[in-house]
Length: 184
Image (tube, rainbow, N blue to C red; front, side, top):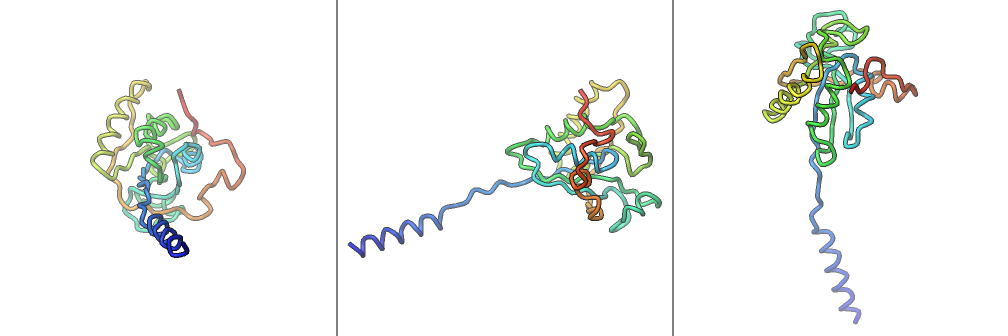
């Protein structure tokens, strides 16, 4: 009897240990839509968004700092890298939010923030992301009177911003996101 129980216990252990774990593959999206603080705050509210990092991308300077992107010709935009669960939220949905949370018809500015670092851009990392961005941009254009000026550009290196920029509004208990809010 003891031997039978021992064998059953071993079989159960091996079965549990050998069971394959289903791992959900996370995807990433990178957008620029003006000051990254407000953009991050809006995307953090979405179900399926696992993590956000604000930073800089789209330029030529390696490891840029906030001061450099504001006062030098780095070519970078303030951007947000979003890690999301595609089983909970689709890339298409993220893009739809992106075009609603800022004014994509203003060149190099959002609200009071002016400069190329505040431009509207989608950085794609696959041909599928590019095609989807172009489709959703065309669909979104129907809702705007002026032409959308958002760049759709191949993604490159994303440089995380300084620590004090990460989770900026959340860490300060601020609920106002400036010019970033969902428009109809």
